[in-house]
Image (cartoon, rainbow, N blue to C red; front, top):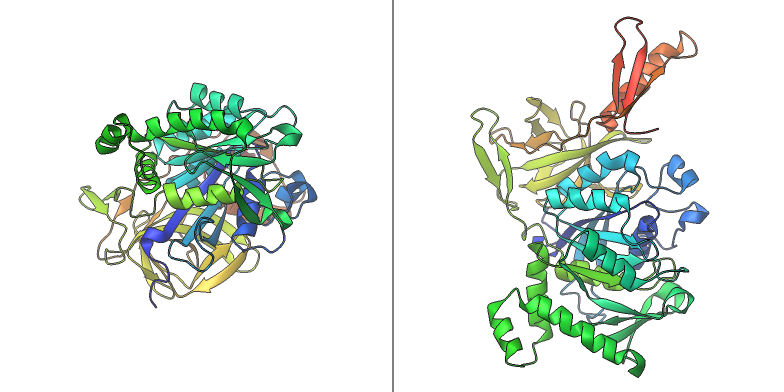
Length: 465
């Protein structure tokens, strides 16, 4: 079986945000526009694809990170030209502080992130925490200021809060036309065009000229954007100072390089609920976020000698992967989500868990579409998939080729902050409770079970109630 998508056209990215910034709605729109789900799920109706656990639908919040595969061809390409079509491996992470481990875990295996902000509140406390995690992992990111249709929404105020509280490298890529209930379109400052979203669910992206009322603003902000981009390239800087017009492709190329090196953070505008602006963010993921080839080789160490080893994102290198999440699936039992950093893996083959020093057999490999699954025979470098049949593997274990063992950097787990005593109602339930607790601690590394030596009571520890 051959690789169906070249590595440079793969984007592993996550969506991170403060709770209620509209992250799951953005994810749902992405799945709808990329054609994975044919009906848009609304959080307040309780039928979203990404939030598939019953508790999540009841509360309208995201608890676990769902991993989904989708495809996208940029809107600026002709319909029949698929030369820039990319495969997205999208991870939707929770924004609630109790679930920080999910965000840390997902960032460890992503190459880039889309950070969603609420257009009314701007930067919120959890946005700062998640931003810091992304800084620690040097994850390139783009920002999306969402909910610009709400009362009190302001693109400029939110943009200013990103500059003040998160990073001075943020640059406006777009400005909105109208705000609150008058929000109707966005202006792309690089192309100097206005984009409207028409038809059912805003499916058609319609390009138009910028209205005279907004032209001066657009020119002023475009000047700032171009200056920020050319600062990253000497030749373009000289052309710019000489007053030459710089080609769009050159600007995009340098902006891509600067974004991947975390020197610039592009900022976009829209309203996912009103179906405005999401497709242009997808174009930006293709244009500015890294493929597995754009990021430095993954570093690990040899379990025997302790020396540092590097693995490039290449199918010919020895197999190395990191298990970043264990989930219990109602149909297939325990699923281990893993990110392949190098080499390939066939289903039915054996894999070596270097962290535990054990060999395990992979009975099946699944590619996940939120809660639906597609079976694949083989996975390649740079992909995210789930394995069935791994009994001993836990979060942040390294899976590799036995001949070339490697232990990848672990995911650092925060210490639990809250504890409570727990006891079964009857003696018969003792065993059931033990099983349930061991399953929970396999899924969530911040969840711990201890027993009080004096009273013999069972104590559970976690990140919140």
